[in-house]
Image 1: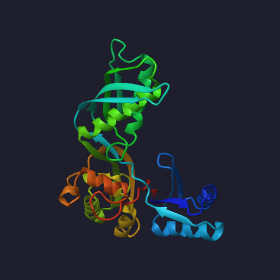
Image 2: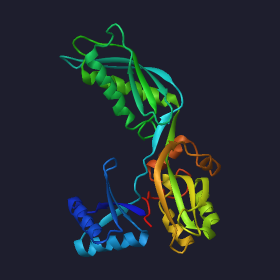
Image 3: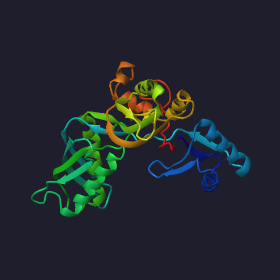
Image 4: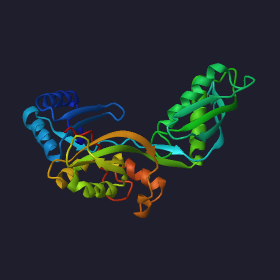
Length: 314
């Protein structure tokens, strides 16, 4: 399917838009509505650009709703390649009780898929136990948007030492100290971009198999192989890994190739650094690719990121 993120142009029409889209989906089951809480997006999926344009025209004519559209957000992440040790101190005196928090942390990368791990190795009461959760919370808050502007994954942070003040220390002071330590330390760890990779199965008549493989390869896909589609005489199923950013109009190109009969299924598989193709095509370094992605552009340096689809029913 082909998806667009929708927002009402007029403030206060968000609830009205949700209700109108729900009615459209009830009337035409080939549409699908998704509310993405992570990105605060309302995404309408359809069979292609024309199908979605029909929905937008219905919203205008039947419900008097003007709608702005954009590509659905691709959930990029970032991680680190190197380790470091840093010190963060928050000290503020402004009359009365001040603020004081002092932490030493080690930051190191973890294997892909490990997520975030926080470890406490404080000994001898250098930091009272009641402040340790605040340190972890401060680290976690910073990792929601790392050096490149995306959530940080597959990283371990170990609290190794610190100090406190019997009067001026507080949860907020230690949370701030932790954020200061991360803001200094993470850029030293060689941050890198991660993009979501989907496992796709493209089903086409056998006459179009080689062309379907070229389409996938042209979208930075990795062909895993193909075989006769079970129960479908004269059809092949091509398996591949494909970056989610390259999936948006795949159904349009695939159906154009196969006279409207090709389909595909997909599921998230893993995160990985963008492959060498972007470098060969002049995509620039990590910071430049991250800047382009935050602006909604392709990491390859040419054009917009394609929208994210869902699976296509037979």
